[in-house]
Image (tube, rainbow, N blue to C red; front, side, top):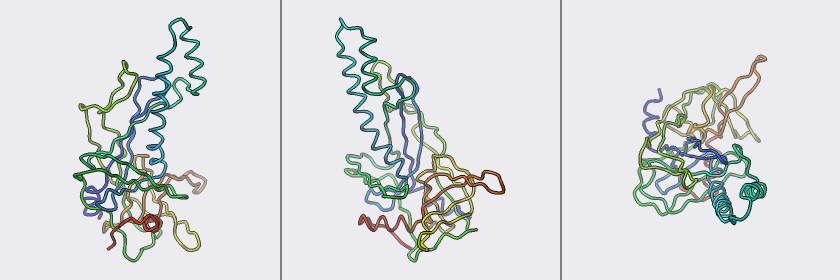
Length: 276
């Protein structure tokens, strides 16, 4: 049912690869999330919490670099352990707990990226990523909205396309530099996986559908993934999961923002999108 829709979506849907590290750990933590393009001008959509984590990464890295410089400048005549402990308290670094570094990569999107801007929705878990200073695009096409918005309906079958499997390993911890880096070796790619489901609940605000829930649990790698109907028309975007008690038992579904909310947000920002 969704084969054609998924083939189209695979051309404009891309993974966000993130690696991070906590204080005094040699382990590199790897995660994948999803975004999709709305036009050929470098505009993509994803979840707000993912976009905010990307923006937070710059501050994390700068703060840790400042910490490393201060730690390296401790005079030899001082008690290094005591002075380091003072620094740790000032920077609020706790071994094995505090995230100190984060780096991200946008796979198979552009030949280069010189600018990156993020605009978050004030209420919903939704954000626009604006890429700038790129040359060749490595994706094709874009999502398509319904010209006359079709409301998500309970019982309607939809499909999500995301990146739930963290299979890439093109990264390393460089102990000598106390740093995490992307590498030229290793597995660079991340595979896409569709997940079919049924809309089981809708939420309205003044008769306008804002969010809806889709049956089936999906991993957090689906956050930011497009939700499509059988014709490949955008129905919404995956935000997170939600658990409800049904017949006394917890039932977890996928929480999605309605395409109408996305469409309105793009219009507010003056971003071109396509309808059919």
